[in-house]
Length: 315
Ligand SMILES: [Zn+2]
Image (cartoon, rainbow, N blue to C red; front, side, top):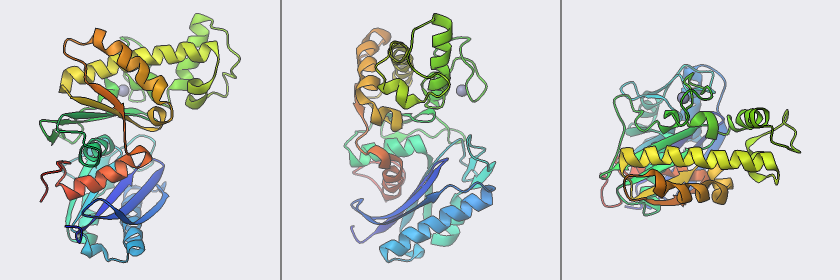
């Protein structure tokens, strides 16, 4: 099957990346660009062009591809094959499936970035058929594979765990709701949360509160940073506990820049607190194996397996 080539696309709010890979998942060509700031058609055309560039790097034509997987920022409109008003992007609606089908003439499998992460960890890192992928990056999200099937949902937005409530009446989330997990543990939220803790609890700090980022909070040897890390550990444990009760995974895999760059600070408190929060046995909690490429490789895995990540399945 190594003669069969597939495409993989990772559409993020900042970067757009594409690869061509063989049947074993080995990358033959890659391309990347910044996600353009134009409307949805501009972004859709950039997606096609970036995959064309990856094909050029691999020395193949787009219509040589047997399938294309796309891991995209959500929310998705699954029936329309589009991203539907994603936050942090100017475009309101980004058509993805139709322009890629037109260009490549093959099946295009669209999943959200967290489902791509889950599919990739299952296929390429032996994650097994009951796996939940949790990303801590700009925001918080999850993708769940249950009984060997990635959950997609009515519009393609199953397992949006970033919007479960971890603090009733708490901080306002980017979506407008109060006390959501993402409103604390998303990289965009961490500095604001740290300022709130400093104000409300009068914790001494040597940090410059006006110029704070998530990286500083996770790395600084400082009383306020330590207090915020402790709070985030508690919220992450609550979020993972809700995730485990919903999907009963054998493995919870953490990806996203915050988890990948601070594995001990993120995974330690979750592993420690989880048993006390669960009515069921605690799953294995581990770091994503695929690192920065998790979504891109997950998109390839989706293309190779008809969207399931099943190492024994696929078309
Ligand atoms: Zn929310």
